[in-house]
Image (cartoon, rainbow, N blue to C red; front, side, top):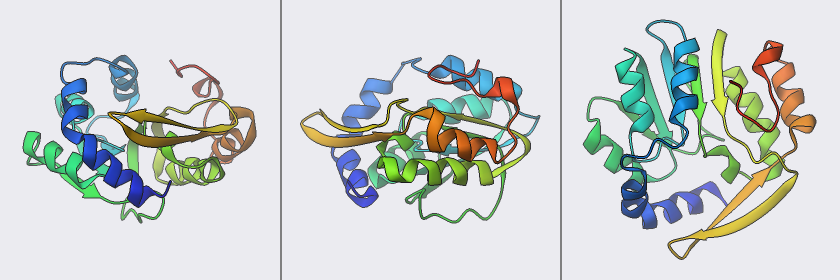
Length: 188
């Protein structure tokens, strides 16, 4: 699935997705932990930010400056309604050129929509966008596979590489510290 198609598919379920995430704390303990490790006044990038604004709100509570990027224009429209003062970008992260580096990058339940042949490239791209001593939090499938599934009758595709393969090689090139990397489970 191309990212443009992915954006169109999320456009179709944006209202439903927003309702599902309303009040959800899914993944937030990891987001909060990552934010606690980031420097004061951190610049944060939320890749695949979606519409719920949970990560945005948490970043604002920490006094961080945050940018959200998503391929779904409808998800971004809803996110802007909730947080009109935040910088949101409708774009494909795989081709987007960032004008800056970040202290914290979060890609929660987003990059696994990329085909597995792009996983290493996207991991390296995130690493390239992190400032020295920055924090990276992302989710990945942990299996060397591609799968598909439906939400609200709309098809979504997922890709993943085993950590021991390209992802680890990509991360190690950027000198991330070793207990920071843990395979198959959250870093914390």
